[in-house]
Image (tube, rainbow, N blue to C red; front, top):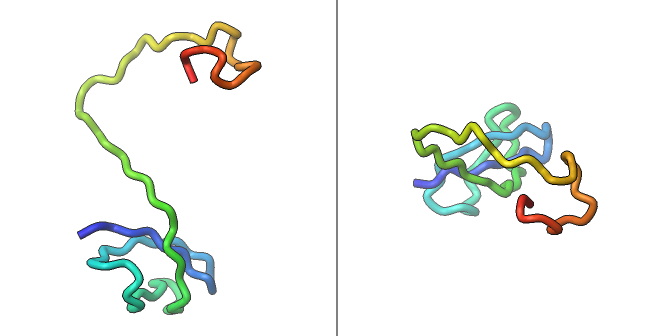
Length: 74
């Protein structure tokens, strides 16, 4: 069952909920009990369990890119 993120329109609180089907109307804010909530855009994280690289390439311009996409690092 997927986890969805919601934001309460009354108190502004953010919360997550396991939902079978989004939009079925029985979701309420756990802080204030308001039923007027909107589903937020969620992202996911994937953890590999492996070592992270320690030697990442430096930006040739010293840390700022004058033109986005001008080098292969962005």
